[in-house]
Image (tube, rainbow, N blue to C red):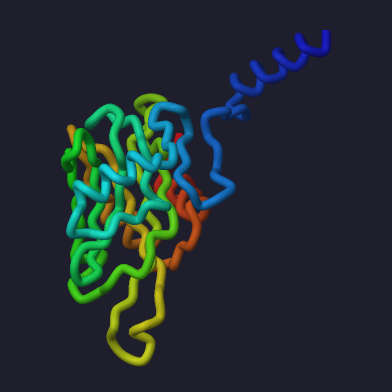
Length: 200
């Protein structure tokens, strides 16, 4: 009887819009997904060797790299990496090659800025068309190298959204999150949901 009552309560809550099992805010700043479709998992030793071989002249950020399942390439590796002159590159790697390179924006991260670290990656649902993670948040720290505080790291947030067979940068949203010095995935998600009406 208790089980039936709980089921009825959940059904009623769902009907009135109070029950939302698909939205889970991450408790930690590691890769998160609202459903199991992307299913980010840490790279194995074999995966790491393949990534380093493909990105031979770059430094992959292994603790923020994940095996994922994306419609762009199926099962592949999501890999942020530090390029020469401390620029950030973000890639999907599959079958010993770069399958996709994420766009970058000089408006968000001008030339001359150096990436200090990538703090967190989050895969999430932005649109309302279905339970599919169509967005990615990348939280990083940069230094400008200019002025008295040039060596002091500060947070930069880049939000990607699926477009066609790739991803685009949501410039306005990224600028707002960066200007507010967002430091966690949860903060970013709350602003995207409450102010930009993403995250159904």
